Amino acid sequence: MDRQGISGIGRSGPDPRTRLLDLILLKTGTGYVLQDAELSVLSMANVPAVARDLASCSGVADGESETRKLSLLKRQVLETRKAATTEIEIAAPTGLMTLRFDIEPIDGEEDGIVSIVSDVSDVRHRERVLKTLLRELSHRSKNLLAIIQGIATQTARQARSLDMFLVAFRGRIQSLASSQDLVTDSSWRGAFLFALAEKQFAAYWSEPGMPLTPTGIDAHLSPNAALHIGLALHELIVNSASHGAIAMGAASLTLDCFETMIDGRNALELVWLEHLPLPAPASESSEAGFARTVLERVVPIAIGGKAHYLTSPERIEYHLFIPQHEYEIITRLEE
Image (cartoon, rainbow, N blue to C red):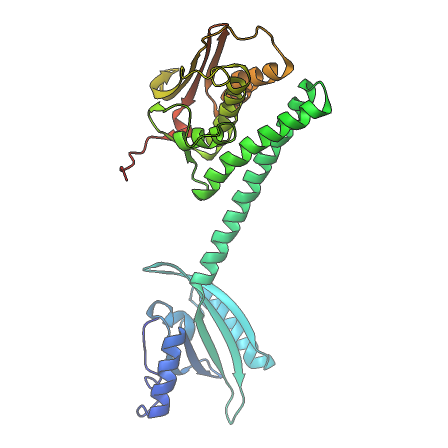
């Protein structure tokens, strides 16, 4: 608030006590307006310039709705001799300002009121931000629960025993949790692709780092893309660790990401490629069937993209096309 001295209206001059009160008002961000029974201003201090006409209720009959609202409330306090409180929002050069008016009757030889004026803009702004964050958290939590429900349902359908269900379901939930950690650490902005891959490998690779070095574009994925692409990487890693390149000790595993086009629009193409030194077991187990469903249907549909999953005894290949609204290409400075 800007400063208007407490001695500015109806006073002969400041004294030490007045200056002290003025300083307290200034430091606490509080002002006041002292008015008589006719709402004539007797004294005013530390009220923002943009709010002085409002605070003094000048021009009651022709004033704006907020001025009239405040004037009626002040007259109510004068008539009932009961305190009242209201908050009013006004436009200010710095943005929307919220002022709290605590109106108290004054007993004495002449009736009057004093309005304590407090700028609560920051408090109300934080409350609005918190409400927005809570709504966003609720929305994202519902999405996350829907993903978990889908994983549980599909895993149960494919599992041949309770033990198989528990192993597969725990792995997929852990995958989701690992991706969620990255998204949360970024304040819900998403996750970088290579960090996401490293996080997914960590549960199945005992050595530090990854068994491969990703190449191409380390795109920054949206929260939605991070969760679903993390799930796709989980399925690819589990398959490879079970009977693919990782299980066979081969280094013929690559992960590449580059720019491309889908349906005439900019996109990224994520390519997982395994060359198998020995023919992989030619079996389509229930778990392999679920992995194919995740890779070919669940993930591409969730991000609005496309996917191709190709398997043969000598090769496993997965292409995921990520639309532009699910990623950003951010150049990160080398540490």
